[in-house]
Length: 350
Ligand code: SF4
Image (tube, rainbow, N blue to C red; front, side):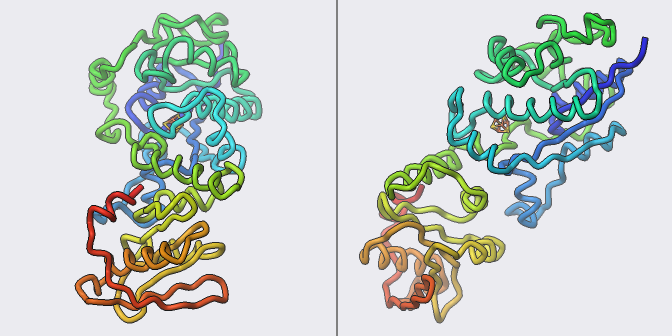
């Protein structure tokens, strides 16, 4: 019997690494794939030069593939089609802005294309039946398989014996008896297997790898879409929105105007790259953050934005700070007292 040729979807987390290790032990020829959606926390931190504590995270999928000596292809899926899916998910959102079912379908379709291109027999993942409330329920796993066009070709090695056999199992390319029957949220069995197989180095704690599952990010995400609608614009997400959503402090000045204030030098530099179509604010004579205003602020909201920018700069204790407002050719300067009402600032924070 020839070896099964398999495409592995890996994140570098415990489950996908174990699935990879298991399929390797079953003798499959494996090519791993890691998708970059634009919302991966560690990858975004890595691209921005590191975490707030100064450490620079590694790409866990690349690390896991290297540890297990498997070829890996890094695929950027963060383009227009992914952004449109995020805004109009057919199966809705999870707890926050995470449309996990649609996202999995999207990724599996890409994986199917890679499987066909590579002439592989199957795609496998580290999904575990019942581990996540919505996207890993039995019925949802089936929906993902069907909607991605991978019927009978999508193997979940960690839970396979609890699921209908795939074609590769039926054809004897993969020994079903050696696949696993893990289900539920506990990771005790996975950790025991990792010890037994010498699988180490997965990120701790598990989870938290996608901005879309983060509550604060989700608030900003839905606020952004609501803000577009309040301005009579299309409910649509752009690439630069993705960058800005994970950058700076965000304040809703009104339904039609929003302020983003940089927190670090790196964030200030990032905001500078997205000035077009927005107003840029910065204190003129003292050090302080760069800030952007989006939308159509009233005069009062412009002054309020300037006061908040002054509050986060070195002039925060001064009676007044000169804040420059640049918008295309327009340059104005507002002499404003830094906003001192913390409760008011917090009430505006998104
Ligand atoms: S957490 Fe959900 S939305 Fe984020 S990458 Fe995973 S499946 Fe996609």
